[in-house]
Image (cartoon, rainbow, N blue to C red; front, side):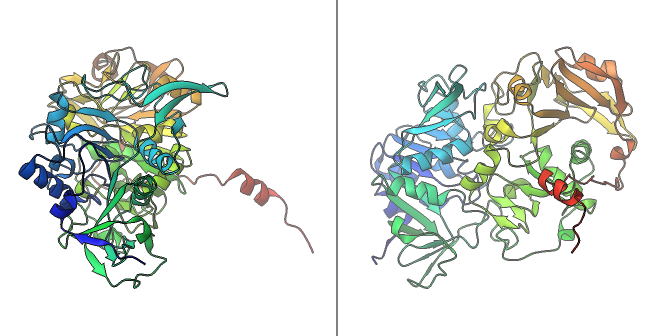
Length: 545
């Protein structure tokens, strides 16, 4: 067996050729091969080479908080085109990441496609297939009849077309064939076999490596340490050395942004969930509490970043943290999903899947419901979560949102009703809106569609919108208010603050006052029904011998 080449980040950068398509395995600061990307940026600064690269990121590479990722490559001349599921994001007051400055300055072609679709495209490229057919993204900004996933005017109309197969309309995504794959693991042996024992997820490292290797490309793996050849447990090798050409060692590799190493993230240790600090009492916590009441014991639940990420911690504080199983697009199953820099990881996960495999579950609707955030809601029930005109860099992009919402049986969108500076007091039994936000999030038409409400109705999906002042449902006749928080004036604080006409359920009721108290809310999740076949089996009378 041939041993791999061990190179420094700068030496590995010399292997990149002008015009290469480089695919990068990362999820913001999780599993990001940052040192290797820095080596490419260093080479360009020294030599103005390589030039005219295309980079592909199924999930964002890097963030604004210490893991630059793609920003190492965000230089005119170096980067010509980027295709990503999501992009680095951060507070609006911060200087935008360099990649966002390039996008908004029309200095780079940029596409935003669903993360799950991008993983699938790597599998298609590996199998020498021309692309994939999918209904993920139809009726949204990804649809070529809208923006086609294009993020600026420089970006041509490429990659996505509409076609009909077997009487159904599909989006056709052209395969992306990488010349170089850059992945990250924990340990490499001398033959390039890779294990991921300290990682929060392997994401899609194997699929990226297959796509490059099977098309004559180069696979570069960044790791934290090196083992003797043949010494790794073959059951733990997630990416075999036959696919790896070069190994870059970074002994200071962080597990995630601001996390040097936490064994509970990688499943090497289980820590008592009582160690998790309670979340602050706030409007966001109230929203998360109300969203938590939508869950049932035994559910499998997906959730996204933002207010929805607080829900597992609400359940944990109520002693119900183990009653549902959380599935994150990065790969974690079970445990308690973490917040902030560690989002995408879970403490004490039951399993850590490949992100590419996790999307098979999510795209197919093989879970009970999802909890997601929103920026705008419009009169048709559509949601924008990825685009704010003039402030695009504060959002990460579509990520797995479109994959998840396409076939989710139930969707609970969570967030505040208005945006801007507000003075809303929690009274202990409700809310007192002293000064409301200047901007409503309920608009006549969203600026771009990330989730298509009318399509959801046609698919029979159940959709709710949970805010600090009311709960609404998407119904065929329109968005309907079903609950109002105590202390809220329905007309003044809800109906008049929407840019379109909201309907009101004849049996509209107050939100539970207990949600607004500082103490425990005695959350009691109703039990989820057994699978219908099990119900039928257990209802039959027991046989006799």
